[in-house]
Length: 191
Image (cartoon, rainbow, N blue to C red; front, side, top):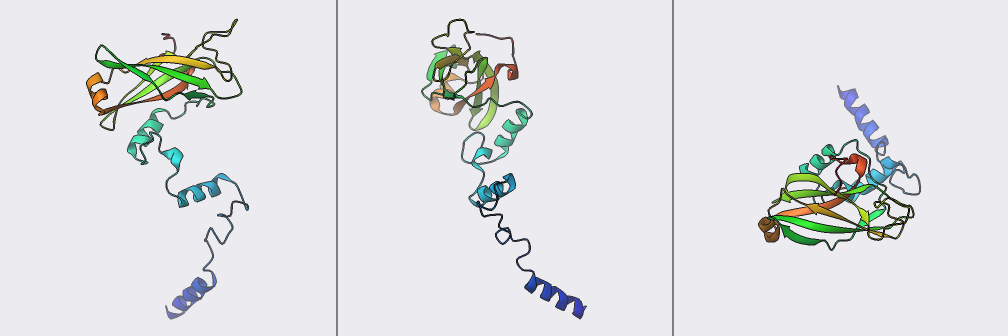
C-alpha cells in the first residue's frame, strides 16, 4: 500500500500536464480550428450564444423544447432578414401582423414561409406557420414568392393562440422566423 502511494505521488508530480488542454495546444486558435477546439473556446467564455435559441439570455429547457420540435429539419441558408418593425393590429381579439423581409444574400430565394412562436409569460404556447413570403415588387416571369438578392418581400401572420389584450400588456411575446415551404406543417396553404 505504501509503495502504491509513492508511485501515485511521483506520477502526479511528473504527469501534471497530462490532460491539460492548454498544455496540449488545444486552446491555441492558431494550433487548430476544429469544432472541438472552438467549443472549448466558446465554453470558456460562457454558454454558446447559439444555444440560446429563444434569445432570452439563458440556455434552458425552453431552448431544448424548440430544438427538439425542429430536430432533423433543414434550415434555410439565411439569406432572408426580417425587418424588425412589424406592424401589429388587433384582428378579432388576436395579434395580426405584416412582416417585411430583405434578401441580404447573393442568391435568390423562393417558397419561404413566415413562422411565429407564441409565449405566454415565457412558456411556449404555440408554433404556427403563416403566409408565404411574397415579393413586394414581383420579378416578371417568376413566381410571386421569388425574391432576388437585395429585394424585399412581405408575409402576414395571425397569432390565434395569443389574446390581443395579453399581447398589449406584454405578457405574450411573438417571435418570427423564416422557414422553407416544404418544412411547413401546412405545405399547401397559401394566403
